[in-house]
Length: 97
Image (cartoon, rainbow, N blue to C red; front, side, top):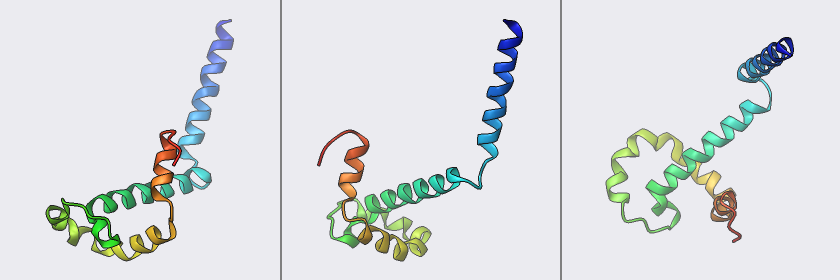
């Protein structure tokens, strides 16, 4: 019984280390996609006026413009290609749009 628990522990450690160091497979692509989505959502909240969404706090977020100015062109292209942004976000929480 005790040997079985130790073997199971080592198997779990081996699986954890394999997943933690496995950056060349699907996990890396998923992390990159998720980081782009999070950055796109952040820019949308700060600079939605560029897409025609009236956001009253844009005046205050203009201080961030020099930091993310390089990302704005790519962001606009990605947001135009994502037709249903709200539907994607609502589906994360189980809402049907």
